[in-house]
Image 1: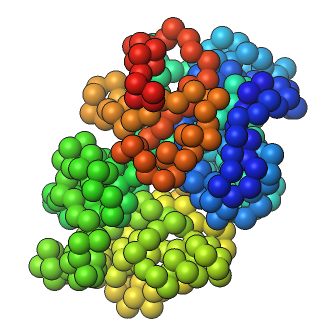
Image 2 (image 1 turned 90 degrees about the vertical axis):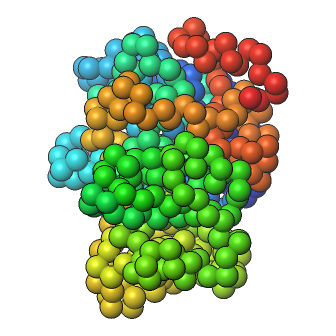
Length: 398
Ligand SMILES: [Zn+2]
Ligand SMILES: [Zn+2]
């Protein structure tokens, strides 16, 4: 089968790889129909996540048709078209039972923090991901959710990560009616977090980034204020100024390890790898939130230490909340929001690229070329939605 194959930092290609097989009675094999590239895949691509092994296949945001099931799979059936949450979760351990599907204690033998994640290095279990024609899906009765009839596949694939992660970012912020929310990062997650902040009653939503085309997109999609930090001397002071010198009630870090904006953080976190990524956005969030406020982190960092202003966390009495989204817990509500048109995730998809051209897809997304917001890899076309027509007459990738 055709699959994305990681060859080392900055290098991926489409290769023939062996078909995945059922390895456990609770596994399923899924023929992938849509598979996104995520901002967090770029952390892998750029060599910022430890134990990312050459030869692995990335991809934790995918939909697909079930082609085979193990002997103990009871709910999912061959022929079902499912969206598959990025978390691999057993559904039975003490963490899964609390709804913490991102922290399953069984699916990742390598760590005691994060659970298993498709295509996300051996620090997240070493599972091959969905940027391939086929993928093995463990615990097939737990995560995979049959796509409701009539739902566009482009909406469905974004319910595997972008929508729940953006939503949970806002949820963890504990937003009160009228609150000012600042979102750092105008990637798909930040844009979705801004959009979802309104659902929790925010009175003002501000997005900060360095790319004007993304800020413009965020302004239109999430009806928020947007500012380019390149145009200001000090983003923290700027946020203080526009919030009566008190700071924002809630700050959301939707950037993670590859933040720009601070030379010292970039050198130590991205070049020398003395810390697990550059926590510039997180530092700004801590320093620009109001005393007693909440910082919500969904940006991804490697599983080791970072230089963050922890003294300010203490002295300001800040609450920090953070986690990988618990996709399965949030899906029922978010499917409803998509069906009711409250959230329109497919608008985020700017590029549709055949799996064969995965190297181009990574380059376009990583280098922020062609005003790319969110690329999706098209693997096996099937006649499921209106989106198919868009693919056949794309001008290159649109
Ligand atoms: Zn993702
Ligand atoms: Zn579990």
